[in-house]
Length: 258
Image (cartoon, one colour):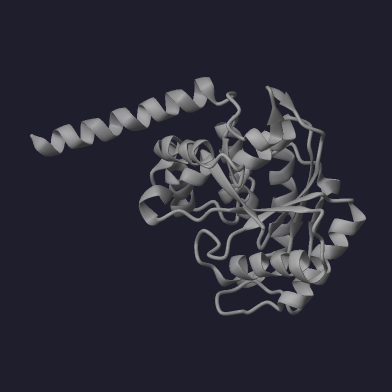
């Protein structure tokens, strides 16, 4: 009987969270991007990822928020994801996914460097990464960068190297006029809590009044599935399950790197 009550409570919480997401996701929790209900000046935002499909698996709430408010989003993918020999296929899948996310193909750059190949245990040179990232920042007059934190959500070494490459740009080249935000890695319980994590994620920006944390609730969750489905070579059963259960489908919490 106790187990039935627990399961029923979890199902009810899941449904309530989905209801909140679908009906009230327009309420702005990312206060840094709004002032008295009005959007601030449009920004040139660079999203830096490691592999094709990172944008769809982890960053869609932030992408949807920014594009829907007219911010100019550029995506820099630092490998073609050729670990299984499908690099050329995955490049095209990324372009298709970005179209689903309302990011024009011409605003997507994919790097295929011999020293930046996809794979666990393949260490990426942080100086090389910093040079590539800095070039994109200069080319597109970027004033805001979003990337992984130092754990990289899944712990993948390529995700973590991207974080350190961005930090190297920030610290070594004195790009102090650029804001850098990292996607906060959740513990395993929050990571697979689906839309339920919205409630806890919304608390952090409220508690931290210094605007070092921002919460993006996904205003178009269906778009996340459509985008990930464009990665047909990766759209196997366990990734379908991941996108359904992952809190990153429904909400992103960003932390400002100082």
